[in-house]
Image (spheres, rainbow, N blue to C red):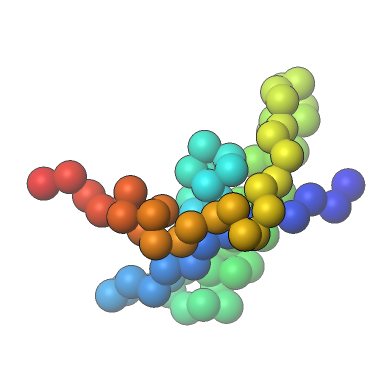
Length: 80
């Protein structure tokens, strides 16, 4: 089963953060863009596999045009 979900990549001081907003803000990070891309694929596959094994509902992916990376970044700002 091939599944593709929008992922937002954010350049940080120490690498890249990746967020899947459709999947309860599933996230991962890596030191380089390439590493974060590889980890995002593994993270997504593991999440979807676990949902499938547990019988959980898996939401349909959003359209890219419905994703607002700036709004997601604003929501990621840590509380002080």
